[in-house]
Image (cartoon, rainbow, N blue to C red; front, side, top):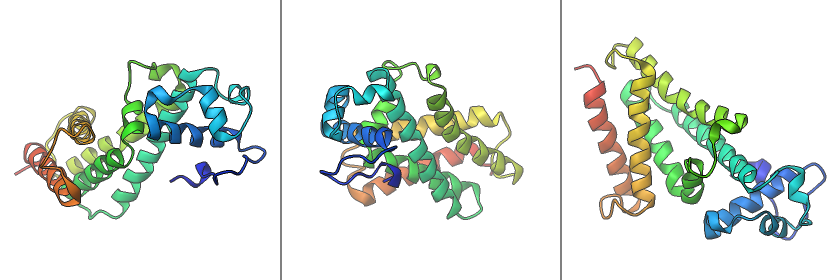
Length: 210
């Protein structure tokens, strides 16, 4: 968990840490009861502050959800970046590392993942910081494709379009897993690894140069 969001139970937030305390409280409520549990008054109560305190940072519930989604994309980016740093220098290995990071993040943060992509709830482009955070994640996919093309390991084509194929597959698998629609194939760590690896192998068969 991001250290800036950690908060000891029962301890009040420290001066200057109100926004992080509110976000952490919101994340806990989201995990406990889904999006329906998010309410600025409930968040304030969870954080141990006055009902008016959240409005210093969030104009309304939509702004709070945008901030939560932004934090989610930042955490996802950190997870993907960390995975890529440990991956061997080959396109297949990098794609598999990205896939493991993405699917693993979804499994560990199902409600946050759902909220990050609930386009019907908020207009992402209306919140510049959220929009930039989501695009930062997509850049990892684009760069992986570009590097693969430069090595002659991935077919030619618009890197952004090919990266979109990768993201679509990763997100589809992730949502199916967290909605328990991949039973029994994705059951347990071994099942999840098998499904993730299989998807990348099939995708790479299409993207990779034989």
